Image (cartoon, rainbow, N blue to C red; front, side, top):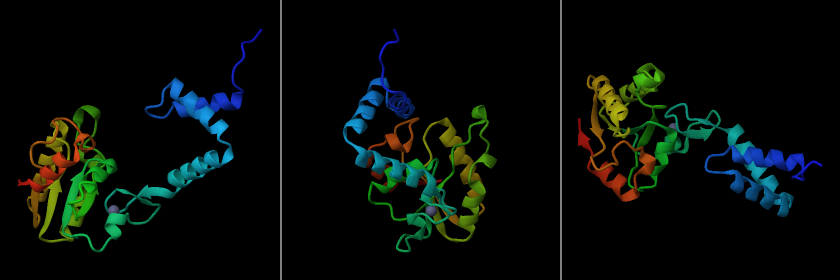
Length: 202
Ligand SMILES: [Zn+2]
């Protein structure tokens, strides 16, 4: 006798949910049952939100943050922001922790990673040329290097500072006090605000 289990469609749903970060076997099962018990409206809402987010969201051609497909992101399109301040981060996910501090009014530039020879990531893999091009179009601008404070972050900051030195811009680095070796997402709001306000020239 074959032991009884959920119908295959439910097992498939559980398997799909389990693939998501932070969702274990029990959590996936609980979520799947929640959808089954709540009828179609919640499931339909999630399905259409997933389709819209994964199909309609792209990367801003200017700064690399998330945007509607093919369009500038909300920051680049916001003409009330300071056009002559660029906050350089590793990943698009590093933008929101800074934004949520509520004090930064400039633009962003997402590198897409950090220099890491051990992982085979060289400067050419990162959005460095597009950063230099933006700086050239904005003489007298400030470039805030908000990359991580781990070894790769420091190497990346040094590389960028060297390449920005010949351009008409001020280069600053987030103040110390950021958690060593951790990304911006791990910094609390007060620490991040202080690091931004206390940034130093390179
Ligand atoms: Zn943008």
